[in-house]
Image (cartoon, rainbow, N blue to C red; front, side, top):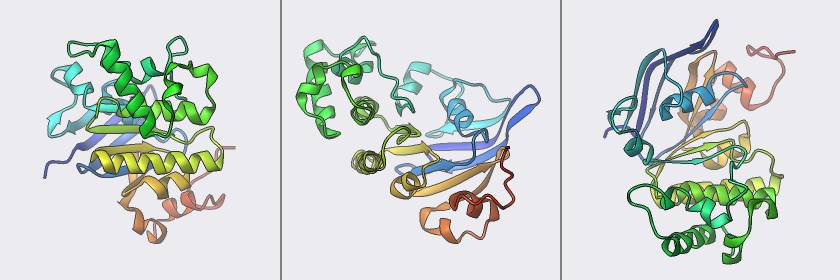
Amino acid sequence: MTPMIEMKGLKKSFGNNHVLRGIDLVIPKGESMVIIGGSGTGKSVTLKCILGLIKPDAGEILVDGKNALGGDRDAFLAQFGMLFQGGALFDSLPVWQNVAFRLLRGKDKLNKSQAHELAVEKLRRVGLKPDVADLFPAELSGGMQKRVGLARAIAAEPKIIFFDEPTTGLDPIMSGVINELVREIVVEMGATAMTITHDMSSVRAIADKVAMIHEGVVQWTGPIGDMDNSNDPYLDQFINARAEGPIEAVR
């Protein structure tokens, strides 16, 4: 079966900072891949390269077997949903317009009544009541804002969903709620998911497979069940938060 996302020899430098040094990674259709690694190791740059926000210096990115760097950009981006790290909600728009933002635009846009109805449905799916739809983001708690962001990410029924640090800024209980929602929704939709996170509880709740990026390459990748017994010293140090090991802490 053709993988949903495949990266071959992906490289990207910013001046003398060689961030990606040859990323090779395959994400099969319908699987949840979680990418871990220290700050500055290239996780976010990898995601931005897939979306075409950053152009790689070398290598190849295939999405559903097609070159990610060519073709119709609107059609390409329509395949994706995104849950942003900071929520990234539009403060001036009510919640329902945030959720239905993409669906109110473009050649296949819905009318306002249809968009409102769909937004309420997606909000209900993430555990929010219909009356939330007419509130503004500033009237919501951090956990509620994250749920709205998740509702927006799934509103257009994307084939691929990216989650950028889905539990950042949330307390442990709300983090657990978001992790469960993410997992449930990905399975329900049959979507392919790629998550970037430092939160090991998220890794264990969300992942089918894990990839660790270190010094610009995939240091280790495998099923979540193999992570704790990988025998890889870099992965072992990272997942157990050890100060001592091959990864040097920046002081």
